[in-house]
Length: 404
Ligand SMILES: [Fe+2]
Image (tube, rainbow, N blue to C red; front, top):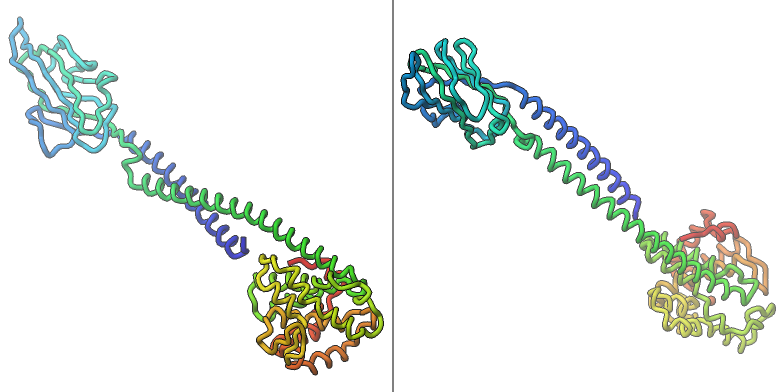
């Protein structure tokens, strides 16, 4: 994963974690608040004459039957109905009604009744204690009174059994928390998969890089004086590509092509490659075959686009006097022009079987003298800058540690 996307993910993780924590806190606060609100006792009073009022949400509707006389008392059946038309359940409710002193309960249902002086007290049975929104609860008694009883004031006390889900804050917190949690799960899953992919990708990349470096070592082993030549050319070529503003992918591609540019030398006799003296015309002709031999070896290798361009055309000259096809200027593929500069610089700056390495001044003069003649001037200027700034030549240690 790129550093930028890693930072973005980290920011997202932190933000979502904060949202999740705040949502949980809000949820807990809502639950506590709902519980506290449900403990608050509400009180309502009604007249006996109340008659199913449409504008009341919670009320007690009371009726009595036909009274009868028994000895010195008036008996009657009283029916009550608790109506809950509110949006919330109610519980822990009880009723008190004022009655004449001297009343006597004969029988009752759906709860416990008691008389205290002029108060008739009702506590609902457990199964009658809870009235959900829209529900009714019935209860009643048969009672004897000294005269026709008129319960002129009925008081209802109750607590709300309002669920936490009835508060908007509950759903806002719940949804925000859920979104944060899902986002965190997605971010973690994607990060894990990307991490796994990157691990595999990096292992394959290392395998490719090490394999190509090994091939480069095989090429360079043919001539002990060119030991490390392919790797140095690859490093210089990549540095040039970087300075030219080429993409990361193209820089790697040029590096790999640099490693393989002299692969055709495996088909050239060692006696010619390592000959200390001047080459005969025939020997020179054989050695100039290595770009086309390399192209032939690599003909089925399509994984690195442009590989054959770099291998086949790295001895072409900008003025058209090179080999292998005598291409001129920008007709020479870019890979060939870049490697030509890197190759020539390394040939001059390292020791060969026929001479020692050349001096800094000589190399710089030679490079500048050949600008636009042997080398593409727009590419050569980067190589010259690398030498002037001390990035070239690379040391043995730098080569050893070089990683792409
Ligand atoms: Fe070459």
